[in-house]
Image (cartoon, rainbow, N blue to C red; front, side, top):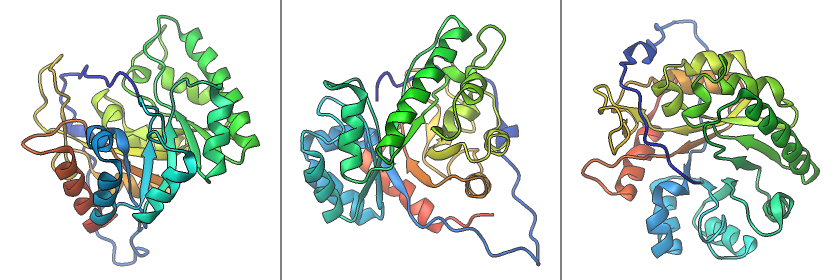
Length: 290
């Protein structure tokens, strides 16, 4: 994962803190998410210093799924794919997916290695802002090709939008163009609730309109009182401490095909990344969906 974005809009978004559903005596039993994961970019420094020890701590906290990324050591952290899978499994963790960077051998080689150990997804994390909407149409074609490669290997391909796909280019939102021009049978999307909200969009509306397209998600919260525009820090906070109504949104996600849920925190206030990871999983383990 590259170039973590720090540009934050300064407008208030309390309206996007969706109201809790009213109690219903005749409602069906509450939804349940059986497994939560973490994007390893969040604990990248700890992973670089002590990969086995960090995975052990994450497993002990209660995480059971991992999403890796294409860092300096690759998505398997300097190990073979099978060795990393075993290390994760020894700590009760399953490597579900990874964000990827260009590596020797190209995309197909990465797909082969991922499929060999049963991974479900390879995900494009970044394309960056573009001056023309036609560039996003080209990206859609690329994603469809990568989706064909993943399908051949028994996997899925996904795209993770940051902030820029929610900014208009040539009068259109790139996220809409990417969703319209990618084959739903080949390309899934990974909703980052934080960026959808901070860019002034409604994540629930997207999940419902494009049902079965957002199969994965990243979770962090948004501060009620936003940090200044162009602040060095993002307006992110631990789950349950901000304005995003996760009990409602995760239910909407489940109802519309979302299967994988990854914590990814980006701002640490008087805490370490591992302490933040513990706060976030503790919140999720107690979460009642509505």
